[in-house]
Image 1 (cartoon, helix red, strand yellow):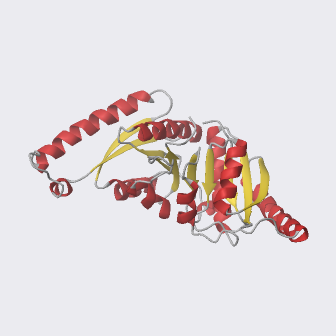
Image 2 (cartoon, one colour):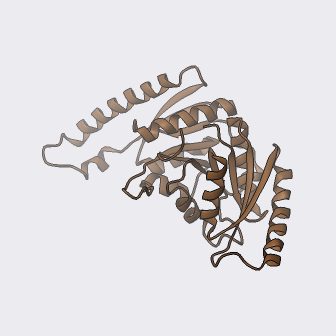
Image 3 (cartoon, rainbow, N blue to C red):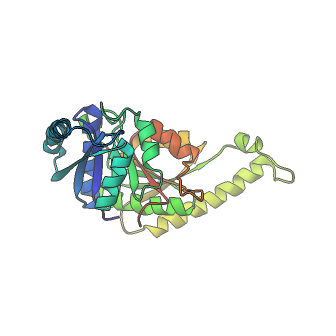
Length: 287
Protein backbone atom coordinates (compact mmCIF):
# COMPACT_ATOMS: atom_id res chain seq x y z
CA UNK A 1 0.00 0.00 0.00
CA UNK A 2 1.90 3.05 -1.25
CA UNK A 3 -0.87 5.55 -2.06
CA UNK A 4 -1.30 8.77 -0.09
CA UNK A 5 -3.23 9.04 3.17
CA UNK A 6 -6.36 11.16 2.68
CA UNK A 7 -8.06 12.82 5.66
CA UNK A 8 -11.72 13.71 5.13
CA UNK A 9 -12.70 16.96 6.85
CA UNK A 10 -15.44 19.56 6.58
CA UNK A 11 -14.07 22.08 9.09
CA UNK A 12 -11.25 22.49 11.57
CA UNK A 13 -13.18 21.11 14.54
CA UNK A 14 -12.11 18.55 17.11
CA UNK A 15 -13.10 15.51 15.01
CA UNK A 16 -11.08 16.82 12.07
CA UNK A 17 -8.09 17.51 14.31
CA UNK A 18 -8.28 13.94 15.62
CA UNK A 19 -8.42 12.64 12.04
CA UNK A 20 -5.40 14.73 11.03
CA UNK A 21 -3.45 13.43 14.05
CA UNK A 22 -4.17 9.85 12.95
CA UNK A 23 -3.55 10.66 9.28
CA UNK A 24 -0.15 12.14 10.08
CA UNK A 25 0.77 9.07 12.12
CA UNK A 26 -0.27 6.71 9.33
CA UNK A 27 1.56 8.81 6.72
CA UNK A 28 4.77 8.60 8.74
CA UNK A 29 4.39 4.85 9.33
CA UNK A 30 3.64 4.14 5.67
CA UNK A 31 6.09 6.75 4.29
CA UNK A 32 3.16 8.19 2.34
CA UNK A 33 1.96 11.66 1.36
CA UNK A 34 -0.77 13.30 3.47
CA UNK A 35 -3.74 15.00 1.81
CA UNK A 36 -6.50 16.83 3.70
CA UNK A 37 -9.68 16.71 1.63
CA UNK A 38 -12.53 19.14 2.25
CA UNK A 39 -15.90 18.25 0.78
CA UNK A 40 -19.04 20.36 0.73
CA UNK A 41 -22.34 18.81 -0.40
CA UNK A 42 -24.12 20.23 -3.47
CA UNK A 43 -27.12 17.85 -3.74
CA UNK A 44 -28.91 20.10 -6.24
CA UNK A 45 -25.94 20.70 -8.50
CA UNK A 46 -23.50 23.64 -8.63
CA UNK A 47 -24.67 26.69 -6.70
CA UNK A 48 -24.28 30.36 -7.52
CA UNK A 49 -20.66 31.01 -8.49
CA UNK A 50 -20.06 33.63 -5.81
CA UNK A 51 -21.62 31.50 -3.08
CA UNK A 52 -19.53 28.51 -4.08
CA UNK A 53 -16.37 30.59 -4.11
CA UNK A 54 -17.10 31.75 -0.56
CA UNK A 55 -17.67 28.18 0.64
CA UNK A 56 -14.41 27.12 -0.99
CA UNK A 57 -12.51 30.07 0.50
CA UNK A 58 -13.79 29.36 4.02
CA UNK A 59 -13.10 25.65 3.72
CA UNK A 60 -9.57 26.21 2.45
CA UNK A 61 -8.94 28.58 5.35
CA UNK A 62 -10.24 26.01 7.86
CA UNK A 63 -8.17 23.23 6.38
CA UNK A 64 -5.11 25.46 6.32
CA UNK A 65 -5.17 25.51 10.13
CA UNK A 66 -5.20 21.71 10.10
CA UNK A 67 -2.12 21.61 7.87
CA UNK A 68 -0.17 23.66 10.40
CA UNK A 69 -1.12 21.16 13.13
CA UNK A 70 -0.28 18.04 11.12
CA UNK A 71 3.42 17.95 11.97
CA UNK A 72 4.20 16.49 8.54
CA UNK A 73 3.99 18.03 5.05
CA UNK A 74 0.39 18.02 3.82
CA UNK A 75 -1.58 19.32 0.85
CA UNK A 76 -5.22 20.38 0.58
CA UNK A 77 -7.91 19.25 -1.85
CA UNK A 78 -11.39 20.83 -1.75
CA UNK A 79 -14.38 20.08 -3.92
CA UNK A 80 -18.14 20.16 -4.05
CA UNK A 81 -20.04 16.91 -4.62
CA UNK A 82 -23.59 15.60 -4.49
CA UNK A 83 -22.74 14.03 -1.11
CA UNK A 84 -19.81 13.93 1.31
CA UNK A 85 -19.28 10.23 0.65
CA UNK A 86 -19.31 10.70 -3.15
CA UNK A 87 -16.82 13.54 -2.86
CA UNK A 88 -14.50 11.43 -0.71
CA UNK A 89 -14.73 8.58 -3.22
CA UNK A 90 -13.80 10.97 -6.02
CA UNK A 91 -10.74 12.26 -4.17
CA UNK A 92 -9.65 8.74 -3.19
CA UNK A 93 -9.97 7.54 -6.78
CA UNK A 94 -8.22 10.59 -8.24
CA UNK A 95 -5.12 10.31 -6.02
CA UNK A 96 -5.15 6.47 -5.74
CA UNK A 97 -5.24 6.74 -1.95
CA UNK A 98 -3.99 4.00 0.33
CA UNK A 99 -6.03 5.06 3.38
CA UNK A 100 -9.03 7.33 3.97
CA UNK A 101 -9.12 8.74 7.53
CA UNK A 102 -12.28 10.03 9.23
CA UNK A 103 -12.88 11.69 12.59
CA UNK A 104 -14.58 9.98 15.50
CA UNK A 105 -17.80 11.92 15.94
CA UNK A 106 -18.84 13.37 12.58
CA UNK A 107 -17.56 15.07 9.45
CA UNK A 108 -18.52 18.49 10.74
CA UNK A 109 -21.22 21.02 10.08
CA UNK A 110 -21.34 20.19 6.35
CA UNK A 111 -21.43 16.42 6.77
CA UNK A 112 -24.91 15.85 8.20
CA UNK A 113 -24.11 12.24 8.98
CA UNK A 114 -22.77 10.58 12.09
CA UNK A 115 -19.22 9.25 11.94
CA UNK A 116 -20.26 5.62 11.95
CA UNK A 117 -22.74 6.13 9.10
CA UNK A 118 -20.21 8.02 6.98
CA UNK A 119 -17.51 5.44 7.67
CA UNK A 120 -19.74 2.52 6.70
CA UNK A 121 -20.95 4.27 3.57
CA UNK A 122 -17.38 5.19 2.69
CA UNK A 123 -16.13 1.61 2.72
CA UNK A 124 -18.70 0.41 0.18
CA UNK A 125 -16.54 -0.64 -2.77
CA UNK A 126 -13.81 1.76 -1.68
CA UNK A 127 -10.40 0.80 -3.13
CA UNK A 128 -8.47 1.61 0.05
CA UNK A 129 -8.45 1.12 3.79
CA UNK A 130 -10.69 3.27 6.01
CA UNK A 131 -9.34 4.55 9.33
CA UNK A 132 -11.33 6.15 12.14
CA UNK A 133 -9.66 8.30 14.82
CA UNK A 134 -11.07 8.07 18.36
CA UNK A 135 -12.22 11.24 20.07
CA UNK A 136 -9.44 13.08 21.86
CA UNK A 137 -6.57 11.53 19.88
CA UNK A 138 -5.26 14.99 19.05
CA UNK A 139 -4.35 15.57 22.71
CA UNK A 140 -2.56 12.34 23.54
CA UNK A 141 0.43 10.30 22.44
CA UNK A 142 -0.84 6.86 21.39
CA UNK A 143 0.97 3.60 22.05
CA UNK A 144 3.18 2.19 19.29
CA UNK A 145 1.79 -1.37 19.29
CA UNK A 146 -0.47 -2.51 16.46
CA UNK A 147 -3.17 -5.13 17.14
CA UNK A 148 -4.60 -7.08 14.20
CA UNK A 149 -7.61 -9.38 14.25
CA UNK A 150 -6.72 -12.72 12.70
CA UNK A 151 -8.93 -15.62 11.60
CA UNK A 152 -7.00 -17.15 8.66
CA UNK A 153 -9.32 -15.66 6.02
CA UNK A 154 -8.00 -13.82 2.95
CA UNK A 155 -9.25 -10.55 4.49
CA UNK A 156 -7.30 -11.26 7.68
CA UNK A 157 -4.19 -12.05 5.64
CA UNK A 158 -4.41 -8.65 3.92
CA UNK A 159 -5.01 -6.95 7.27
CA UNK A 160 -1.99 -8.74 8.74
CA UNK A 161 0.24 -7.49 5.92
CA UNK A 162 -0.90 -3.90 6.48
CA UNK A 163 -0.57 -4.22 10.27
CA UNK A 164 3.00 -5.53 9.92
CA UNK A 165 3.91 -2.53 7.76
CA UNK A 166 2.34 -0.14 10.25
CA UNK A 167 4.09 -1.77 13.24
CA UNK A 168 7.43 -1.55 11.47
CA UNK A 169 6.73 2.12 10.76
CA UNK A 170 5.70 2.98 14.32
CA UNK A 171 8.46 0.91 15.92
CA UNK A 172 5.90 -0.99 17.99
CA UNK A 173 5.09 -4.65 18.51
CA UNK A 174 2.72 -6.38 16.11
CA UNK A 175 0.10 -8.23 18.16
CA UNK A 176 -1.77 -10.91 16.19
CA UNK A 177 -5.01 -11.80 17.98
CA UNK A 178 -7.54 -14.55 17.37
CA UNK A 179 -10.83 -14.51 19.30
CA UNK A 180 -12.20 -17.92 20.30
CA UNK A 181 -15.79 -18.16 21.47
CA UNK A 182 -16.40 -19.79 24.89
CA UNK A 183 -17.82 -23.32 25.09
CA UNK A 184 -21.14 -21.93 26.33
CA UNK A 185 -21.55 -19.91 23.13
CA UNK A 186 -20.57 -22.89 21.01
CA UNK A 187 -23.13 -25.03 22.85
CA UNK A 188 -25.90 -22.67 21.79
CA UNK A 189 -24.96 -23.33 18.16
CA UNK A 190 -24.91 -27.11 18.30
CA UNK A 191 -26.06 -29.15 15.34
CA UNK A 192 -26.98 -32.79 14.92
CA UNK A 193 -23.86 -34.93 15.07
CA UNK A 194 -21.63 -32.13 16.37
CA UNK A 195 -18.98 -32.97 18.97
CA UNK A 196 -19.53 -31.93 22.59
CA UNK A 197 -18.91 -28.18 23.10
CA UNK A 198 -15.80 -28.73 25.23
CA UNK A 199 -14.34 -31.13 22.62
CA UNK A 200 -15.15 -28.68 19.82
CA UNK A 201 -13.60 -25.86 21.82
CA UNK A 202 -10.33 -27.78 22.28
CA UNK A 203 -10.23 -28.61 18.57
CA UNK A 204 -10.83 -24.99 17.62
CA UNK A 205 -8.20 -23.85 20.12
CA UNK A 206 -5.60 -26.16 18.63
CA UNK A 207 -6.43 -24.91 15.14
CA UNK A 208 -6.31 -21.29 16.31
CA UNK A 209 -2.87 -21.72 17.90
CA UNK A 210 -1.56 -23.36 14.75
CA UNK A 211 -3.00 -20.53 12.65
CA UNK A 212 -1.47 -17.88 14.88
CA UNK A 213 1.93 -19.59 14.66
CA UNK A 214 1.70 -19.60 10.87
CA UNK A 215 0.67 -15.95 10.84
CA UNK A 216 3.59 -15.02 13.07
CA UNK A 217 6.01 -16.91 10.82
CA UNK A 218 4.69 -15.08 7.75
CA UNK A 219 5.81 -11.68 9.11
CA UNK A 220 8.86 -12.81 11.08
CA UNK A 221 11.84 -10.51 10.79
CA UNK A 222 9.85 -7.42 9.82
CA UNK A 223 9.00 -6.24 13.34
CA UNK A 224 8.60 -7.57 16.89
CA UNK A 225 5.62 -9.95 16.98
CA UNK A 226 3.54 -11.70 19.58
CA UNK A 227 0.35 -13.75 19.31
CA UNK A 228 -2.71 -13.63 21.54
CA UNK A 229 -5.58 -16.12 21.84
CA UNK A 230 -8.54 -14.11 23.12
CA UNK A 231 -11.47 -15.64 24.97
CA UNK A 232 -14.79 -14.28 23.76
CA UNK A 233 -16.79 -13.03 20.78
CA UNK A 234 -14.54 -11.21 18.31
CA UNK A 235 -15.89 -7.64 18.61
CA UNK A 236 -15.86 -7.28 22.41
CA UNK A 237 -12.66 -9.33 22.75
CA UNK A 238 -10.74 -7.19 20.24
CA UNK A 239 -12.14 -4.03 21.80
CA UNK A 240 -10.81 -5.03 25.22
CA UNK A 241 -7.43 -6.17 23.91
CA UNK A 242 -6.97 -2.98 21.86
CA UNK A 243 -7.04 -0.71 24.91
CA UNK A 244 -3.26 -1.07 25.31
CA UNK A 245 -2.52 -0.74 21.57
CA UNK A 246 -2.12 2.35 19.43
CA UNK A 247 -3.82 0.92 16.34
CA UNK A 248 -6.36 -1.83 15.69
CA UNK A 249 -6.46 -3.33 12.18
CA UNK A 250 -9.26 -5.60 10.92
CA UNK A 251 -10.25 -6.95 7.52
CA UNK A 252 -13.75 -6.88 6.07
CA UNK A 253 -15.47 -8.91 3.38
CA UNK A 254 -17.05 -7.81 0.10
CA UNK A 255 -20.09 -9.71 -1.15
CA UNK A 256 -22.78 -9.38 -3.79
CA UNK A 257 -23.11 -9.09 -7.56
CA UNK A 258 -23.47 -5.32 -7.28
CA UNK A 259 -20.09 -5.00 -5.63
CA UNK A 260 -21.36 -3.72 -2.29
CA UNK A 261 -19.29 -4.23 0.81
CA UNK A 262 -21.22 -5.99 3.57
CA UNK A 263 -19.50 -5.36 6.86
CA UNK A 264 -19.42 -8.22 9.31
CA UNK A 265 -20.71 -7.60 12.81
CA UNK A 266 -17.16 -7.17 14.14
CA UNK A 267 -16.18 -4.41 11.69
CA UNK A 268 -19.55 -2.65 11.99
CA UNK A 269 -19.43 -2.66 15.78
CA UNK A 270 -15.89 -1.32 15.91
CA UNK A 271 -16.56 1.39 13.32
CA UNK A 272 -19.45 2.80 15.34
CA UNK A 273 -17.38 3.12 18.50
CA UNK A 274 -13.66 2.55 17.91
CA UNK A 275 -11.76 1.76 21.13
CA UNK A 276 -8.51 3.13 19.65
CA UNK A 277 -7.44 4.27 16.21
CA UNK A 278 -9.09 1.75 13.89
CA UNK A 279 -8.14 0.70 10.36
CA UNK A 280 -10.61 -1.42 8.36
CA UNK A 281 -9.25 -3.02 5.21
CA UNK A 282 -12.00 -4.08 2.80
CA UNK A 283 -11.42 -6.82 0.24
CA UNK A 284 -11.86 -4.14 -2.42
CA UNK A 285 -8.69 -2.35 -1.28
CA UNK A 286 -5.79 -2.08 -3.69
CA UNK A 287 -2.98 -4.51 -2.96
